[in-house]
Image 1 (cartoon, rainbow, N blue to C red):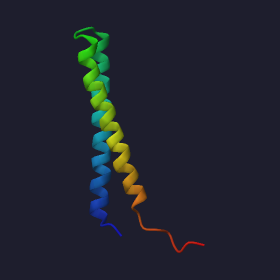
Image 2 (cartoon, rainbow, N blue to C red; image 1 turned 180 degrees about the horizontal axis):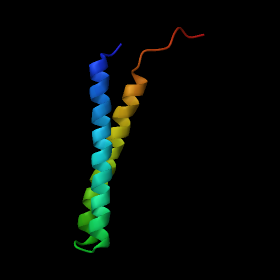
Image 3 (tube, rainbow, N blue to C red; image 1 turned 90 degrees about the vertical axis):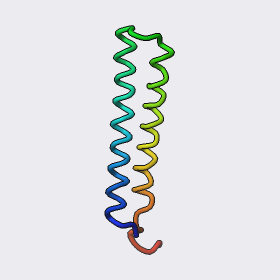
Image 4 (cartoon, helix red, strand yellow; image 1 turned 45 degrees about the horizontal axis):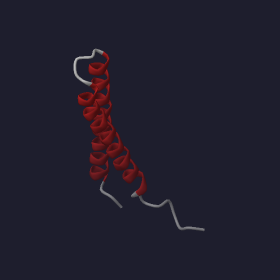
Amino acid sequence: MQDPDAIRRQKRRSSRAMVAGLTAIAMALLVSTMELLPPVVTTIPALAGFALIMYGVHVGWLVFYNREPDGPSS
């Protein structure tokens, strides 16, 4: 069984990655719609944001997957 503090840290890391990824995508979209930079430059933070979101989903899935089983299998 995992330590409750370790689970809490993983959940917090997952949430931070998700928020950071969504923020990066939103900022890239905002800069792109204002046409402040070329589209290629705004694509890089959007891809990084997508990678952060996928990392957050992965860490969140590990919290669920590594939990203690409910009981013996049938």
